[in-house]
Length: 56
Ligand code: FES
Image 1 (cartoon, rainbow, N blue to C red):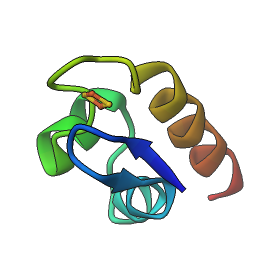
Image 2: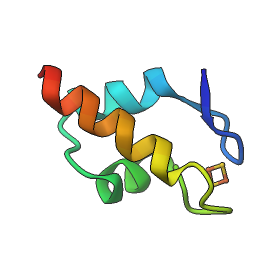
Image 3: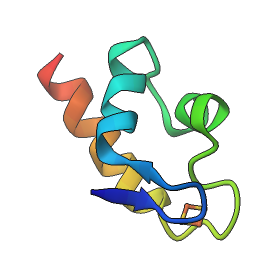
Image 4: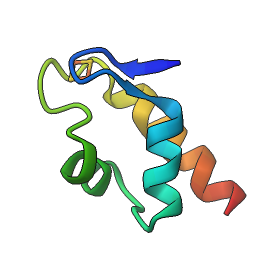
C-alpha cells in the first residue's frame, strides 16, 4: 500500500530500506524521501520502520 503519496512510496519500499540497513525515519527519508513534503506520512512510516526492526 502507499504510505507516502507525495513520493508514491509503499510500505514494501520502506521495509526494504530497513532490510538494507536503515534504522530510523531520518535514514529512510534520506534514502527514499519519505515525509519530506507534507509530512502526513511520517507517523505511519515510523510505525512500519519499527515493525520491520522488530522482525529483523
Ligand atoms: Fe509523505 Fe506527503 S505523504 S510527504
